[in-house]
Image 1 (tube, rainbow, N blue to C red):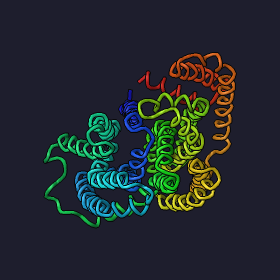
Image 2 (image 1 turned 30 degrees about the vertical axis):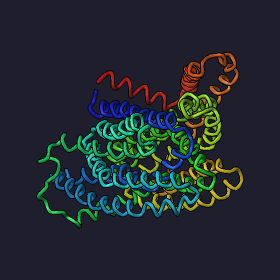
Image 3 (image 1 turned 135 degrees about the vertical axis):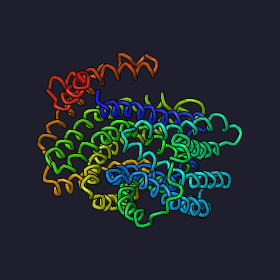
Image 4 (image 1 turned 30 degrees about the horizontal axis):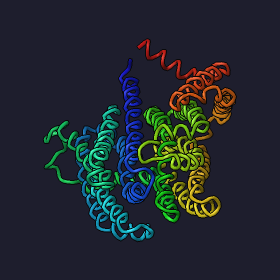
Length: 503
């Protein structure tokens, strides 16, 4: 088996572990605090600092990988790593100090309906998240370094440490310090993640401590990084806007929206991001060799394979949404009423999972072509649209309209991005992609119809066994249909697996 394919498998496994540990974190929070004011305050308070965290964590990796590889070819990789780590430290420290200082004012301004104790919880949650930002930035640079070296699993392991620390703090400190335990766990986890990297390299090989900061090199990097980071932040910014609107409906509404979004977005995180990460080196290599045909083929396969896995997962969630939420969240302080309310919101979020997963792969195409500024402009447009749609839909159906807005904006965002990318590269084979999508959608329809007809046979089962049984039957029907329709994406995956065995 080739090193790249082995790394891809390890990355997929570590990504699954990261995403399921993130889901377990949400389960623990739901168990300890339910969907009331404490969770609402936590979700509200972390929105702004989490935007900067996502900016650093995801945007940094997408920008640093090609940048590092370019310098490494000139035997200046370590020097470049040092410059970016130092530059990011100063920038991140400035954001941390400013954010922490302004947190009391921001929380009071954005969430004036919070009572005094909940406001204090929100303020300190925001402060702790802001204090973590400068270390998050440094962690992100090194995670980009590991990705550049093909060690994808190390990056996800690094992020998993933070999640596990949050879980541990919530479990063991919630009775002692209440809702403060969640943010404290994140801050401690960020410190631990940094120390793991520090001791992995050793003090001497961590960076070149004596090297003078090359401000020009840092500025050049950040001119590339900022559009990428802003583009990746778009989803989080739109989520923040939804949280601000949700604050008008009370802290409970913020909780329902965040629980639903995190659950529904798991398929996107697993399949969309994983396929995009694996496809990225392929299209980047094609771009380097000026092989536009290979670039287009990589994009087409990425879009098709992603949809192959994502479509049935989302369809199954639509069929069993309330049961899934019951399994994941309903225990402890999270009761049946919270399950129903969260389910109602989750249905409206489903469209966002489909469209933003497609957009993730399209965005990789823009980054590879050094056209990050274009998709950044589209992202800014989507933020403006989200503000308008949030107002319109929330006036129509309340806080559930905020989830619907996210899906509608996701569709518009993805459609415009796809159209503009094609204008720059010459059109992808829309007919080929469309043909694959039709086969996949038809297979999903057959799967859902059969499950709908037979699901009453298993309603007396325990909810976990009910969901598991329907999932297994549904997966079997779906893949049989794909095989019968001779879906190219399925054959590509089988061929890839056969190739792995031969190697």
